[in-house]
Amino acid sequence: MPELPEVETIRRDLANGILNSTIKKITIIDGRVLRQDAADFMRRLKGRTIVAIKRRGKALILELDSNECLVVAVMMTGQLVVDGQANAHTRLKFDLSTGQTLLYNDQRVFGQLRVVSDIQAIKYFRIIGPEPFDHAFDAAYMAGYLKKTKRPIKNILLDHTFVAGIGNIYACEILFRSGISPKRIGDKIKRNEIPIIRQQTIDVLNEAIRLRGSSMRNYVGGDGKKGQFNKRIEVYAREGNACVVCTAPVVRIIQAGRSTFYCMKCQH
DNA sequence: AGGTCGACCTGGCAGC
DNA sequence: TGCTGCCAGGTCGACC
Image 1 (spheres, rainbow, N blue to C red):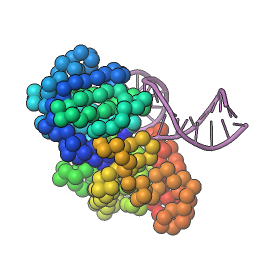
Image 2: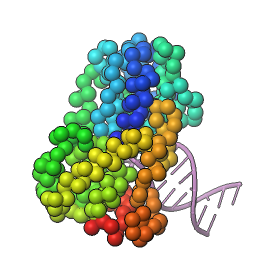
Image 3: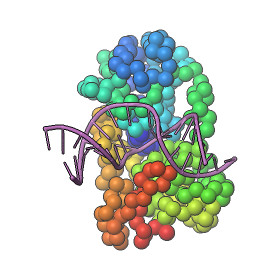
Image 4: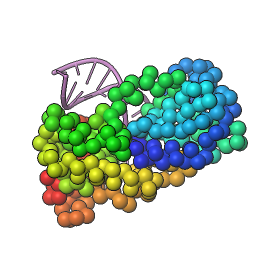
């Protein structure tokens, strides 16, 4: 899905656009995105007011005046767009008390929406690690985790039980800026390299949030517009192109079944 | 127990 | 043009 910066951008757009509005009508165009019975979903949402909009990892949490939450996982291609034009991928439509509409679009239908009374009922929220900006994500925590695993650092950054919200683009960019090879094994990361990875994680994600995320293909913010971090991407999806630092070609390898992009000269 | 690998879906693009 | 195969910001669960 969109990763942390993209989901945070959607969250902010929704907070600016539809906070405190009431859901008047729900239209289910494609019920495959629901993780509960459609009638139950509608019953628990209709007439409810959205009182807070939060994010945890890559999940959005819309808190309702019923003390329940609408949890949205947009996964790879989900979009939440305020006052957009419905299209072939529009799966849900919410009519709001303000006269606005909120669309849930999702090309690949991987996304999931459900209403729960307690988010802890969803496994994702029980197993997810610290937010990258949280004090809990510090060098001591990282060192403790890294020393007991033989997995490559790229896979560890992608593991949301280690840290929440990092996906394939930002894992590659964080490691490039850190000068660390994605193949380095967790327990071989040196003590003095850990704060570098931590700081680059925070800096890259903050910069991406500032630029409203990256749009490789499908992603748009709550305003329906693409993100601008693409201009700052230095390795992701740049296989064969010159490294921006040393001009050696960026290479692509497969790790845990996913593409990794890096510079063999700059990253060790 | 830790780690890897399909499955879930649709669609764009390169190559023939 | 049209086919085939590959690839895609994620996550879970089955399997080694």
